[in-house]
Image 1 (cartoon, rainbow, N blue to C red):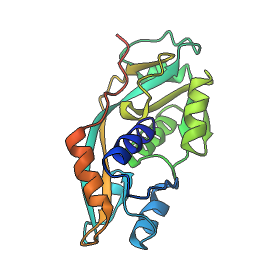
Image 2 (cartoon, rainbow, N blue to C red; image 1 turned 180 degrees about the horizontal axis):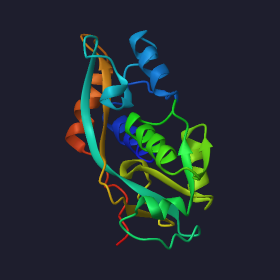
Image 3 (cartoon, rainbow, N blue to C red; image 1 turned 180 degrees about the vertical axis):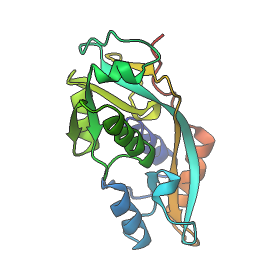
Image 4 (cartoon, rainbow, N blue to C red; image 1 turned 45 degrees about the vertical axis):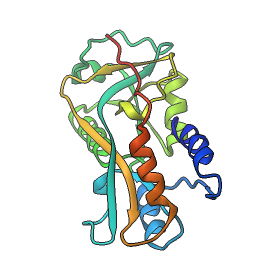
Length: 198
């Protein structure tokens, strides 16, 4: 989300005639709204969409999952972060209707493997990032989710590396400004992700 405002400002300089509005839904609802023609482009993972019969996916960004916390939280465990380290911490999970499938799988694996895990569940992305920033616990998420300008957050690699990607999805064979926007974003590129703690 940290990059969307910047992208829109820059794109409007190039294409001021394009009318832009934003919507924020869980991934299943976004895909349904795209198919129904209520929006032109969505940002999601490839497995959030169907087999590709009606939709086109353009990969934008690859990333890696990290343990993310506020400096005020005071994580003092190991880096890379192990399951044993996480068992001693309070974790912040993102509700499964909002998080990307790989994040959901990681959260489920942690709750299965760590019987006495201490965690809270945020029911949307804004609360998730606020809870982490406020020092209420450690989130496990991809680096591209974390605002790189937030120097109060630290990212610690996980012992077992897990990667992910995100991209732009549009309807196949539908004429819309989305195709031009996607081409512009791919040519321009995206900002760097958050630096990782040493």
